[in-house]
Structures are given as structure tokens and as C-alpha cells.
Length: 475
Image (cartoon, rainbow, N blue to C red):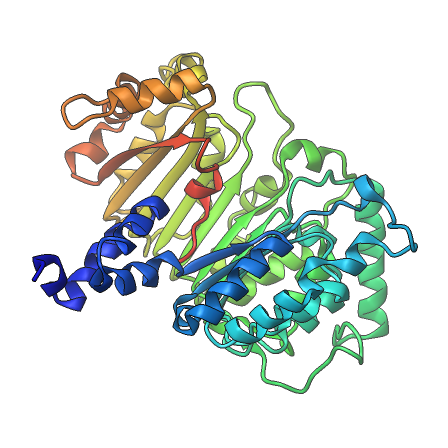
């Protein structure tokens, strides 16, 4: 008998777990022999993506032939592009959204099959409305929910979507790339004030209100959503959410350039959020879209939260153990912002500090003079100032690690080929080593104390995007 068939099931599962990020490898493993097929399928079908009606038909055929495979599906990602502007109306006058593939017979069958197994649900559906909501509402056992383009989702639709997901503990909302207009922002602000006056308890509507216990969230991501004041008001409504057990908050607000277009920013709901979760929060991620050395407008949110540390809502974060600062703007950090943020957050319990940044590998040489300038040239920016601040054991008495993750983004095929050729067990790419040495040479105190860890992540844009660095499913 082939020795491959004698391996214990737990060993086979461990092997397949190591291969779980490589679909081709799992597909090959499933064909090795019958004993390998089942363990390979566990990870091969742990996540499925649905983008079109053909995907639904294919999955229906698979589940009909092998019903047990549906039990392996832990994560479901549903996508539907907004093609109304391209296609307009079909001949009978029906809009594209009214004939969403999610309303098809196959999609309905898939929803009924997967409703009891899916624990993580990703939604990139435009528009998200009642024409495609029924499919998603069948996923009643979801624990983690990620929604893209939340800008376009009405609050009543969001309420209807989540009210049946009674196991939901992790909610991640992404605002997308929509431009923020001052007039829209002001209209939204006035509407929220009007709603608060008319219905002080903040219920969206009698139709969508259900007498059920509030959802107890432990993780919350708000990525460029703070301009949707009605959404923040909804999240703070104790009838829908109990934020008293929130442990992990990931917050990225609009770019400084977009803030500059708005006459008066309303911080009311973000302030309430910090004060509501402050004493229970263990981990905070603050994300920016820095634009480097081009003298951008001041970040008004940073000014609001750090100008007067005594009265800042950040003072509520007395039990914070982990702080992550991310720059998603293809530049090294604006270190003056990092310093003032570190100065304003209570640090007595901070054990882990993490910096994450994304840069274009081709632009790396141009960024070095700015981000690693000597103190006499620009005392507000150098990493040595970070080193000086964090080495103060009175300020940071329990600090254990300072991690720095730099994602190198390779844009050209030539760069990608070079990256693949050069990264071997014997040879590490020179750009990566240069980055590591720059941090180690400037953060000497942290390195000497054994606190510093620098990691380089190489992004092949043919296979993954920047979100791989800044947000991941909770594997």
C-alpha cells in the first residue's frame, strides 16, 4: 500500500494548512490519492468567491455531487459590480440591479446550503439594496462581516442585513474612494441633527426595528467612514450594538486634503465612540494616507485629538496594550504626526507598538533623505526622535516590542521578475536589507534592548493588493 495513504488524518490536515494560501498546490494535493482528497478539500473550499451567475451554477453542481463540501465553507466573499451606468436599462425598462445574479435560482439554492456553515462574510455588492439583500440575509451564523463601499449603503438596509446575524462579533466597514463634498457633508450633518431632535433614541425606522438583544462587538473597523455621521450614530445606538466589550478598534479617517474642503468637521460621534470604548479597548489601529513631503494641509483630526491631551477623548484609553499606526499613502510616515499621537495616548499599559507603511520600490531612494534626515536638518521628522521617546521607561514601562512593517510594492513586470529571481535562501534583495539597516541604525536604543523588529513584505500586484498588509481576515 502507498505510504502516503497511511499518514494520520491530523498530519494530512497540518500539511494542507501549510498549503492553504496556494490554491494550485491544494488542487494538486487533492489529486494525489483518495486519502489526500478530503483534507485538501477542507482548505480548498474554506473560502469561496462568487462574482457572477456562472460561479453559482458551478457551485451548485459541486454541492449536488459532494454535499459534504458545503460544510467546509467558512468564508464567503460576494461581489457584484455596479454596471448600471454602463448598461443602463434593459429592454423592458428593468434596471440592472433588479436582475442581480444573486436573485437567480442557483444563487437561492447556494444561500440555503451555505447559510448554516459560513462564519465570515465579505460583501462587495453595488448597489446593496433589497434586490440582492435576501441572498445575504441567509448567512445567519456569520461572526465576521466585511462590507465594501459602505458610503452607498442606506442605514435601513444595513439594519435589515445584520439583524438576523446574532453571532456577529466582528464588523469591518470600508468607505471606498468616493470624494467627500463639503455640501454633502453639511447636509448629512444637518439631517443627523434633525433626526436626533425628532427621535432622540436614534432608531432608523419603525419598519426595521426588531426587539432583539444588541450585538456585542469585540472588533470594529471604520475605514474612511467618519464623514457618514448617520452611520456613526447608528453604531453608537445601544439598541443595536453593545460596545462595552469592544477590544479592537481599527480607524482610518479621510485624507487631510479632503478635510481641508470641509468648513467645519463634526467630531461629536467619533468623540463619543472613543469615550464609550476607551476603558475596555486593548488594541487601537490608526490609519492615515500621508502624502509625504509635499506640505499637505494639517490633519484636523490629529489636531483635534492631540492639541489638548488633558481633555482629549484619547485619554480614555487607559488599558490600551497595542497601538498600530499605518500609512497607506505610498510614503514613509509623517513622523511629526506619529510623535504627537504617541505623546497623546496613555502609555502606561502599552506593550506593543507597530508601524506599517506601503511604498513603491522604485521611489524608495527618493524617500530616504526625508524620512531619515539628520536631527539638525529637520528635528521633527527623524526616526531618532521616535527612538528617544520610546526608550523612556518611565513613559513606556511595559513596552515589549516595536514592530515596523514595510510593504514594498513592485509595479512593473521587470521588478516582479527581479524580486522572484533574487529572493532565495542565500540572497536577500538589496532594497529590503537597505531598509532594515536604515531603521536599525536610527532606532539604536530599541535595537539594543531587543525590542525592534523590522519586516519587509514584498507585494506582487499580480496576485495581491495593499489591503493584504493593512487588513486581513482573522485567520
